[in-house]
Length: 106
Length: 115
Image 1 (cartoon, helix red, strand yellow):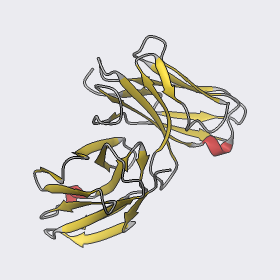
Image 2 (cartoon, one colour):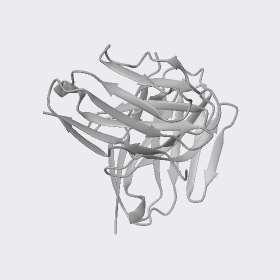
Image 3 (cartoon, chains in turn yellow, red):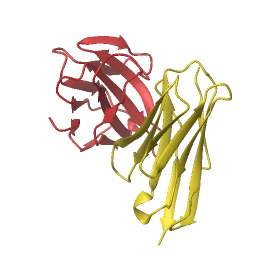
């Protein structure tokens, strides 16, 4: 059974800092890996989807990488802003991690 | 529609009551997913529809949980004889095509509180 782990559980950084969120998974036979953002009391917003044949995807200040062989993905956020404060979740094969709660302080 | 919608947004039920939660997926989306999200946790998969066919219901926690999508569009998740441990946010997601390769678009969720 697929297990997804996200580290750290929470992260607080000053505005402008670059940061990395980590996601690991146990079953490397995945179709894709998706990163989501969840604001308090809201549903999930898809940020990036990396197909299993890809190594990375970029959207604006976000860059997600995928290493199937090691069972890891990272989400890199450049020049963080207070509006980036949210919980970030990764998911593959319909299994989600518990998320990393990010706080960007002005 | 513009996005996935869910109703009601909030539901308070007394223990033992039956509840029905509705999901309106994005028009034309083939796949529909239901998830349960407990406080501080990631969503947990409940069930998956491809059009009107329920292809996977392995995540439904008990036979008190039932989902349907009779016309391949709107879906309803029904919970019978609710219990306190059913309190959670129930999320619905849809994707354009079939399988696990597609981006999922989530609704805002229904927050269920069982007293």
